Length: 325
Image 1 (tube, rainbow, N blue to C red):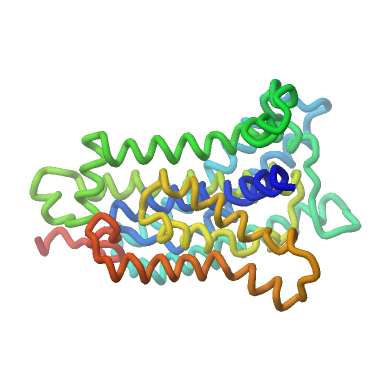
Image 2: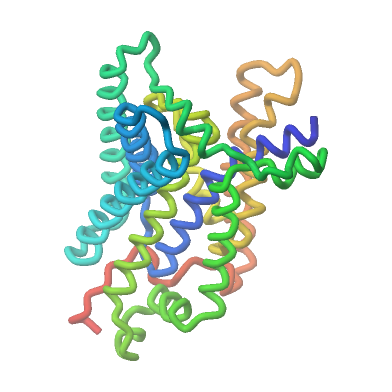
């Protein structure tokens, strides 16, 4: 039971890890992207569209193409969403909160529209799309996992996207703390005017960081559909995972490496009610609230301690007008 619980907690947490890592990259550049839930949704449906078109056109599914096509489709859809956000908030200086919320609404509507359209094309009796063959290619575990018993199940039984999420989080953490470009991005998030005066191209860094963050977040949506949901797409099945990813950013105090453990914790809290017997519906809903409660408590603690390293970037959510520096 313990091994099963941890496995499911990790699988629940991987989409949150992708979303939080992408959002941390964006926020380190001073932009609060509340469009992450919509971007993750678009990343998921874009991958589904790519996989659906490939499965319909191919007589036999090639495992490599079955992975590459949805992966590229998801990255492209997420990138376009990130570019929309960049143009509106960086070039046109639109309000970041409003733009992000609008992007989330658009992303969910976009996903539901095309998801519903694909469901009609399949003439399915259920309101869902089953991409079983593509999902099998994504879910392939490491070949030696079964030989290692519970150790293999606990550490080596996940798909490549799960390990990629952890590697990306570690690399991003190193990037922020050990590289010159990472320090430049952090400087922009703290004070873009000072960074600009030092010769750093503020808009370029903001564009690149936001677009890369959007691509990474979109992969969280793809992972959820192809791995966790076994290739089954249903409209609105993604739930509030995008918002939990944003909450995880606060819980991890803007540190991608801390997000790894935080995502597993959040994933465990999301499924804990399944492992507790004789719970009423109201009690189950209260347990599902725990990730948000934990985030609020962390926010209170870091506010009381008031340590600089645990605070968000100073210019987070503020538009930068170069002519005013």
